[in-house]
Amino acid sequence: MSKNSIARTAALTLVSSLLASAPASAHHSYAQFDASQTISMTVTVVTWEWTNPHSFLQVEDNATGDKWYLEAGSPSMLSRTGMTRTTFKPGDKVNVKMHPRRDKSLNGSLLSVDMDGKVLLFQAAGGPPGVPGGRPSGAPVVPDAH
Image 1 (cartoon, rainbow, N blue to C red):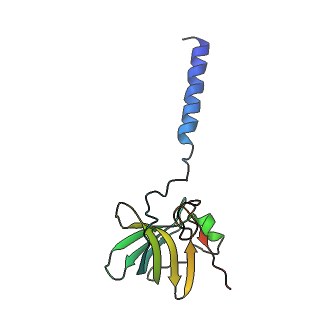
Image 2 (cartoon, rainbow, N blue to C red):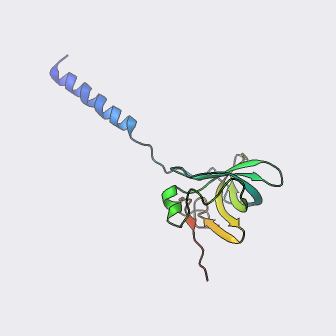
Image 3 (cartoon, one colour):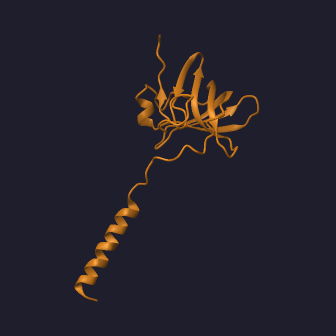
């Protein structure tokens, strides 16, 4: 092998390694959620997973006992509205609204959580609260106090 051939091979190997180790884009489609359906239910919080790129609220439906896994925004987005890793605690009784997954699994895109009259609004999957088609951030929207 010539020096040029060895140098090209080494450069290609280095570039390939760097590309393979680069983090994948955190953005993904919200097409998995059915924005034409909204499910409301009274639930008990199982866990609040404060994780990147999205946080998740795992809840148990008080009527059926089914466990649901609800997707929310990233910790950085959620913290801008005053939420923290302790906003929800296991055992909290809350009311949630969500867009369910199209595949009928027990997963959804979190729209709102009512905690004894304090309503936390989350960005609807793919748009502003309740409106499909906007930016898919999942970030909560703090309602006006007026």
